[in-house]
Length: 329
Image 1 (tube, rainbow, N blue to C red):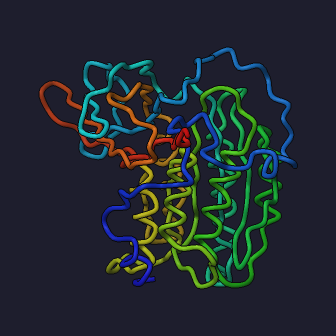
Image 2: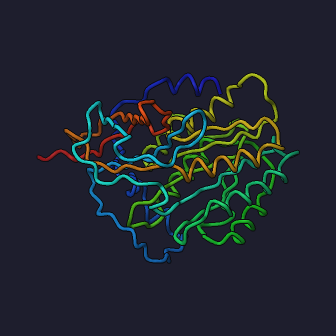
Image 3: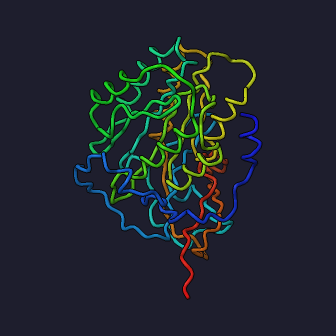
């Protein structure tokens, strides 16, 4: 685990030859036909439509003051820098409640969580039911140990999703990084034609002893697909932070999400309630970056929020790789 953190380093700002558009409404280079083959495409018509442009960027972010989410900000309260420059044009600024939610709930089913597994499933079911508030919101349920298993594909029905959670079984090792990459790709592969908010919520102790991919690769998967990751630790210990805790924190922070550490099973439900409020109080801003060059280079993102002359805490993804346009002969 320590080696994974060391290999990650503090910056991944290198050229990405496999990354495509920065637009979160696109799949980010994922093979949609392959991954979406078992996903039902029937959705109610989305009345909220934005014209897509491959050179537009969408950033979802949360703003808080002393730990309390702020949900009354205006565009004038926000300043954004892309590659250290203000955007050429802001296309849209709005609360996250505008676009549909695509939620993935990823539950650690390895043997290490056996004693508290039943309680975790009950808390997870209540969380998912509360999260899906719009007619176009969808979620899928997956458990992971040595492998990742989808127990309920995309659905808006709380009863079906609860059954998916109930089907999760407890056994095996832990392949967290593989599961994160899979969930990000599955979220991106759903056949959406309009802008959506992609969120991955992970319930895990943060251990990984079976993955073929690395921590760095799982973070890159979230970046390519425009997925925001929120992690909730199931470790029952409020002592010093472990490497597994740091893994959960890095996964969340690099994607613009947040890591929660309840410390015991009895406060897990409260943490999930707080998580609901955090996700639903986010904002998004869609913009055309200045001096954009489709060369595959890494472009940093900085979002600054000020209210009444005071700077607020902002959680947003750190950057993206520009789409790579093939060289012309």
